[in-house]
Image (spheres, rainbow over the protein chains, first blue to last red):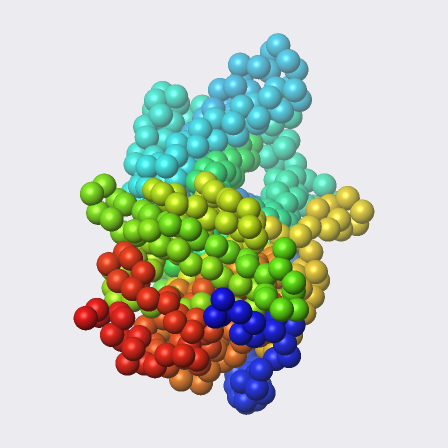
Length: 363
Length: 252
């Protein structure tokens, strides 16, 4: 045939290969280095901001009260306890936001879980003993919290409902169910083990802080070291690419929203333990804090970026602002203003960064 | 089988392939072959059936008639994944890369290697990914110093190279490239043309779709021209001219 032996299959690279542009790659690499350094700094911005904030309060405290802010164990303890619930919500929210979604239902899933935990522990305590009742109540509450998560996941993954709308609907449903289960009031828990879990300390470190720290470490591992985490980043950056690479997007999203529901569930249980009561409105003010923590922590609401460690810094920033303003005796409403301003600044930084790295070399 | 040193092995053969969508005949009785180390250009106006053809070859569409032979054996693909498993990889125009991940992570996307940390904890094997990225990119004569940087840091042509590198790493024997130079500047286009030459030198078969006749003449060995779902002609690049190809494309 006429097309036989056009090119030997083991032929050397043709002359075209040598006419490469030697400057293309190195030039781009130079720009990469500068850009990557900038990205590193930007990634650390939440921690830098946290340090700056603590320093500010420290100065204020020394000048105004002649005492320390940071080196007071009570302050550190209080900030850590403040940060527990928003941080638990925010770890789940981090995963969802990286995937390009958002979970607005977390606050009321948390309330629902708090109410369920309170009821179940009260019901189980006489029969099971105090310790087992706490374990059982926690498992049931987290499992119940997974249900609205599952529904969120089905809405987003299979019915293609935008996450904002789907989880907003679930926000209403979870809220209603939580108030119905609570009978419109708070549900006190009578169980000393549960109260100890919520308020006890070991070497000055509250148990709920230890539980949260362990959970956050596990979530950090899940996001940064597993296929699930890797796929989450890929889906947030380019769903098409992820699908073509053979990732089961639906299955991933389903698990993702169940995970965020369960994070809210754990937050609800710890809330109930701390206040020895379940309340439907437990997580109501915390939803925005969770989104704020994620955004301050360096994640982009467009998806594809963010880390658990950044979110930890973000949650601490919010907790330090909230506690610090009370500490220096400012009217508590300033909290809302300052957290709001921090959120806006974070988003502006993210956009500036996006514009900068978007201007990649067109060569 | 063929004598390797004389006639390159036939990698892919399409025989009398047809595809209709209801009453619309998108592809009609089309036959073509791709040999090892050969670049076959597909040309034709919009709606000529190029995309239908490559989607049938890559497992996106099931053909209505005819057959596809891979190294002489008839094959059917239920999904693009099956085609990929058999060594047919499609490089899409819009680059199927996750911009926020490194080259290695993109190469392994969906098939990430794991290792055990501390003897028990399964973690992503980033070292292996980086190593594969380095060797694969070197194979394409493409050198990067920052293997951990997200691919959004790279230029269009470099990203195209990453997409090709992924196919090469997974040992694709046939690469289907849909307008790989369309969104690129001139120096980047040259880089991609070079990459195609590399693939050819490695004995892979390339199906190259382009509107740019200059690119086709720079890289292809043969050109298959489609018009309204049928083959309007097939020429050896060495034996044809721009004018003739254009005539085949528009008819008359």
